[in-house]
Length: 299
Image (tube, rainbow, N blue to C red; front, side):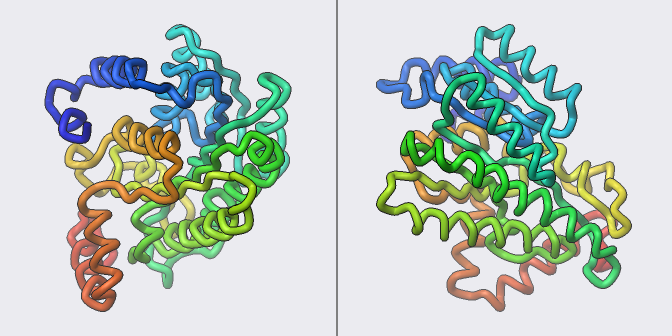
């Protein structure tokens, strides 16, 4: 499957999505048909790709994001393709917004089978230079957003023996320089999700943590600088990265198989392996790799 996804025949987004739709429809068992799926950060990138993928395969999708205009466009796109969707403008750093998103799901469809905590924001600045408000904002969105949404969805997920997903990052496996707040928030998410899994071992709750590598999405464009302003242009070559659609498919399949963890991209898997056996060596490798970025703060 991975080989086909990377074939040039599927570089066109429409053809790729049609391929995924046909592939999933012809699976022996569609495990998500009729399921209610809540997805945060669904106005772009991985969240948008997940919303389309689940909707195209028969799930009832509830999407939330801060960008109301983009969120409406995603919902309209799903409706035009015949999918069931409702949306709620949601800033996951706001507890009440998270509660309202879950209430919207229950009011619309009566239950929740899958919660995907995908909303996130990154940063690019040395810790000695960064304003502490930037670190707090990243923790509020990446960590507390996961906590808030999971808290309000948990009673319904437990009743359904459903799935809760945290979209982490390779930065949650190894701390990345100039991404101190981002790595901290992802490590915090990982610990929360692992503890949640263990607490509910006897209750049938499925907990998945996904670790994408560098992904071609807008997360680097919206990454925060030292003063909290948006970075704008990405410092990395997006063309060589895994696409958001590919990441979404991996997460989709992992939910169906009720996996506990997935690490994506060969770079991510290698990072995890080297960190396990040679963490000091990896420190130097990561530093040298990040220092090669255009406009790196280490130059």
